[in-house]
Length: 173
Image 1 (cartoon, rainbow, N blue to C red):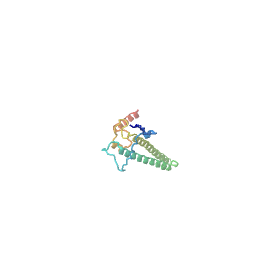
Image 2: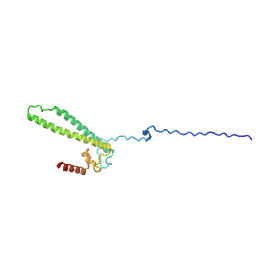
Image 3: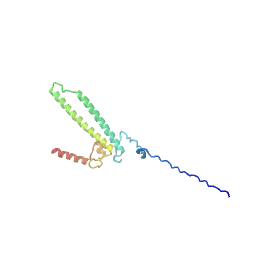
Image 4: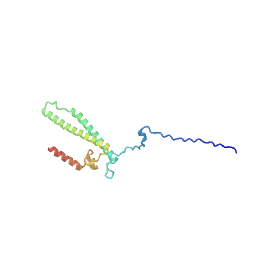
């Protein structure tokens, strides 16, 4: 019988190369970017919607931004036109006193508006942080009606009354 030789086949296993991500960002699965929510100019938040949903946040952000823009414009106009009307050089003492009083009242109004702009900025920051619409003392919802009436509200009505009572007590000291 003829000799048969067995030929061994060399089997090589190839390993699939797994490329490792070079950065941490590439390791994370890509999150689907949400498109910004658009609401109409006539939209008004409703109690039937989830409290402080994205629509509510967009509504209040737009409202606060528009309010701030109007206040800044009014302040700039008041400062520009107020400086042009100067009766303090007048020889009449009554005109000088009247001009001084008018400027004083105008500056107090501008200072109040500057404080309000600061409050608007803080409210916008609370929207970014996700705590807008909730009382800073109790963490309870402030309520849509109150926020629509006063978008810079930080406290529920009960907490606001408590703060005002404390301010009154300390002011009497």
